[in-house]
Image 1: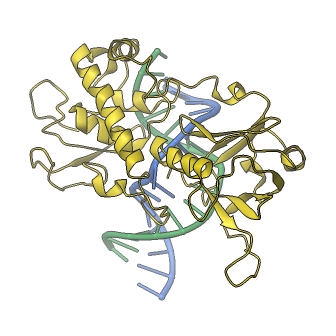
Image 2: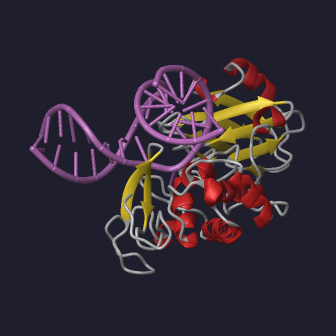
Image 3: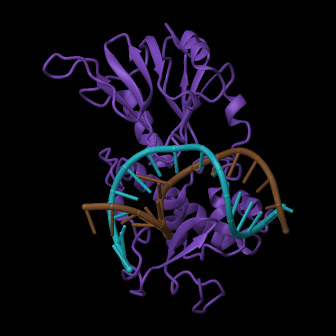
Length: 286
DNA sequence: CCTGAAACCTGTCTGC
DNA sequence: TGCAGACAGGTTTCAG
């Protein structure tokens, strides 16, 4: 589930509260339980539990696709990877019985106001760190797509410094932090750039359009509370506004040509072969 | 430096 | 119905 807009949605809900769930800011973590050891990336579960116990949540932030929860001592950092989710569940069910943890709950935190902060993750790819300095996890990340320092000229220079296919480059978190498979396909469609175009041939005009498209699709994703697809539904609506992602064979919203799917870097890739030419001006193969 | 494949995992869907 | 295979919002590591 998690690209930048989905993580941003979760972060906002936890920081501001999402009625009836409260904000977790200024709440004390009473205890934690680890059901899947490997979810904790940098400590063993005993160390993790003892360091988290009685800590005060100071804020809920995002860096790229990471959730960043500063505590009064240390920083909790969470990456949801493919199937992770972070939700608040009341300690008691409506009938007064205690909430039972679910099959895919990997780590749970009991908060002082009797809510569970639950990290649920069917595929077990998600990871949690407890570190003294967030840079221990973030040191390698590229800029945020909304960073005001990231000007079109700067973006073009970054692109031209590499000789790579544009799609995998945009998804490289050391290049740009936050883009995933869905929003990359959508942004490249919006900018009318073929996903296999090489980054060193992107000119200023295209770089400008691409950066605008990235910011546009991410903003739209956030505005719709992210995308909810497959069996994990979290209230997001952006899946109803996809232009190309998972629309194989459907007419391109711009020109009507059937949307095509190819595989790039082991990822399904969706684009319009007419609007996103590989060579300038022409029809092209995938 | 760049690309592709495999690994880490579970669940769903499709086709035979 | 059963079963094999493809596929899924991500990242890391390794081979060529």
